[in-house]
Length: 142
Image (cartoon, rainbow, N blue to C red; front, side, top):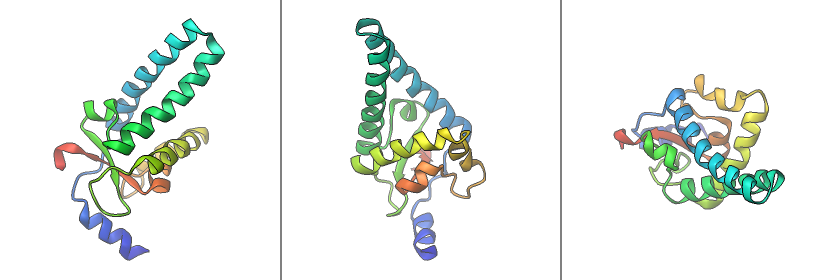
């Protein structure tokens, strides 16, 4: 397993995205999702707004990270979620993107430790990055 990780690290020369840049991208994406949720809540009701917002969030990150590796927030800050397992700069695909989004919920539930994990991880991976076999890189290095 260690040899596989070393191979993947060598195959991805891009600099890993830092905490503050990833946080800013998440805030942008949160605003987009929040606007959709607020509109639905105003039209249908608050409970439906939360439910639709939850589903929209899953679809949003699954689509963007699965297809291009970049949500609008990521693109605005020059970030991309790429395949770490295969050591490529390719997006992770829809199934892994959905799995990554789902695990990101757990990353946040445990006092955000799953997100903060990147601060001491050598590859700057969060729990959901590790689970999905992804890494977030800066696009200016690709």
